[in-house]
Image (cartoon, helix red, strand yellow):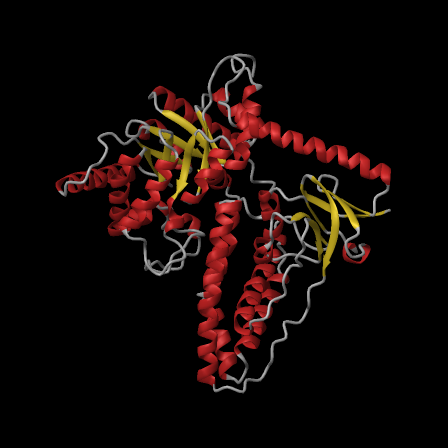
Length: 545
């Protein structure tokens, strides 16, 4: 028995056969082309299209399994495939006589080297994203892939590192745990492992050489330790922990089926955040009492043209009918920042998070926005619909949107199409401006949903995905909590519902603070719902804070 220590970045315990994946360093790309330049450029264009389709499939899978935030790396991959500098460099190398695959890999390596030399750990980790897209594109061009090992039984994967694409290609029914010799806390492989609930250790130097093929391995994601060939006493100890882990999972699933009622009798509705109609069944299985956020922009992304009105109606209908009479909050388009589409004539912005995004972009491109509002109006008859406007910073954005919807409602009725008489309108309070103006904004909407993710990073000027400023990104910062408290108080004064929608909603400690402020509802990733309900059931909100 011996062990290898690393850094645990996804908790949990797993025990099973260890399989080492020794990746090939060389992609086997040939340098000089035997084809004409024109033929090689055509190969490159075909490879680009095939790579786009593959990454689009991976993106949709990542949204469904890991959530919107963690899927964004694949959106960045697609943007790289459309980057003028990248495409120009590859084309130039091809015109100099290189094969398409050599030109792609040479360009990706050069760009990755630039990122690797940066001081920021977060930016250095992005080199792996660049190499990932390079590998995907080369594999499309050559037809050669270096695949994760297959096994008839579940196993523990041990390798040097995993790219985001490799992580998403794993058979999650077979991978019990992941041990990486390299990796970083901010790598998307680490992020995806956490969101998928797979025990994972990074920086486990020497792990690949420490395990013989199919040798029994224990991975303790909490302690950051891999134990190889454990003795009987160690095996027994971890078998008890694994059994306790399974029992707790079953208990949580049972709790998720019940309503979250505090000890003093207050029911706190807990909703799911989803990004596609396919996530409805999963949300219900975890005990969601409705949908607190349906991100509609994912219907519009990874396409050459926006979805038609009929396509949107069908997507909204599936969610509304799937939820029955439960409340469904559908957020209007939140394009911009890290979510871009090729069919909108938007300019490159120095700081897209502060640019033309969300409701600003929708009111600039009204034709597309009206199509979405028409689809929402038509779908309203299928369930308990609420419409939510994102990134509001001025009152006139609410007024314009509601006026547009009334225009759409009248138009639909003239066409003989039914629309519900009363459809509540709300806003996401995720800008400091909206929080400060919340008393005035509350006069014009039916509910508030406080988006703690964006609100925190805007108040503190700290990117939550940037490891270098992680210590600045803090929802509990007095400035952030003060604005949340002010927003809740203003919602209560106007007797409108207020919810928390963001990662903080799934944090039991923060959730209690929000509920004591007067927050009515919580909305979070589906997998967090059972734990949140258990925590709520243990609270006495009439007791001392």
